[in-house]
Image (cartoon, rainbow, N blue to C red; front, side, top):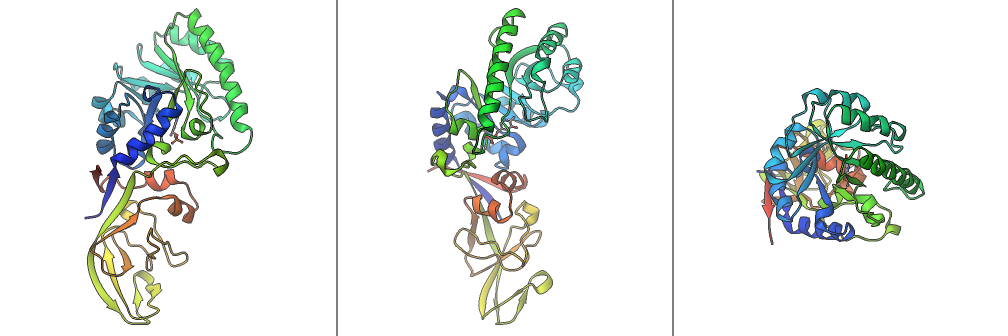
Length: 344
Ligand SMILES: *Cc1c(COP(=O)(O)O)cnc(C)c1O
């Protein structure tokens, strides 16, 4: 059966690197949204807790309920119906607009999201004062304030311009916090790229996703961070046959054997979330092996007859091949694939 191997030692290694940058493991919020970037929430949650992380970010309430037994605080990013928010000690909702503040039930735990120039979700800096008074009037439980950088992985000044806006926002929020008697507000802004390029933490927490899984898209000029990919995809042999020179293989007969050769099919396909390859651009696997012809929903053809093959242990080149980012390749992996945790 095809499976994903989850390398716990690689995860621990990445967290150590990120924790050092963030001034300690208690400053890290692990981002587990979208099935832990495809790694599997059920498998990752105990591992994330085992390295000492106590706060996490998830996509929605379903994910929050899945991970809640393992963590002290769970920040929920997406809630299209704030009036349905669940009031629970561990759950914190991202409050992204004044409308949402009007809809959350009384006593909902929230972190206020500020739009510091990404212009998707978040309260504008000019609305912060209004937001604090709505929060007070509606008796919401404001615990923190945060923002998200749109250009932390870009060379250039975008990151620093946005950081300056955020620093001003923080000052405003700290003053209002005193005025409204909201003690112990926490602040967080950095994702992986922001943390690795700039370890000036200013007493904040950092939300780390992709780096904890072993990747970061930062120009080499920012340094080499020595992160290790956590996940690898393995498949097992279904059958083997011999092709004669000129034989066609697979849908559309798009692969034509250039010589006599042994080929095998393996039990992974695009139905498992592996991107669909075709004859126009052949994808090379980790050992240089090429995927032969078109990928099926449930199987793949490769030269040779090994019992088991590793399709990848690093998705960087696959992301490049499909002109996308590692995040997309990872988060598309099917939740139905078996996950096996390995320890050295
Ligand atoms: C996904 C996400 C992150 C994590 O970003 P990485 O680049 O994966 O570290 C942090 N914050 C928010 C709000 C996110 O949506």
